[in-house]
Image (tube, rainbow, N blue to C red):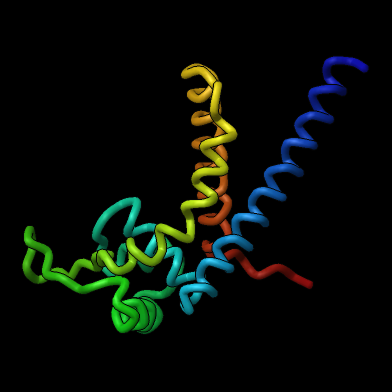
Length: 162
């Protein structure tokens, strides 16, 4: 097999594996959201808040890809009623409201991800720092590509003649 052909086949296999990984991630997050009794969009909000810290409702709407106003307000209201988030005044600008994740969310959500975290950690036992750095580069590049692809789908496209 030529090196070009082997590379193409490996790249095709890698892309298929990434599709499986993405699908499994969506299904896992759906199962977590279902266990918590919340929508998957609500879980995405909790994930963003746990990774990036407090956000304004507008920032959450933009990051998640929902409309400002009604949709983001309804999501925050649901999460606040469940005790997973709170609205607080921004100490830097008292006119702004920040959405913050609560300790209840951490206590109830984190354990649902713990088994997955352990399993992934076990996959990396014995890997050296260079190997882990290569994996980090790959995951970061893949995540960036996914973000760009998502953003391109959110941009209204020109009407296509049928």
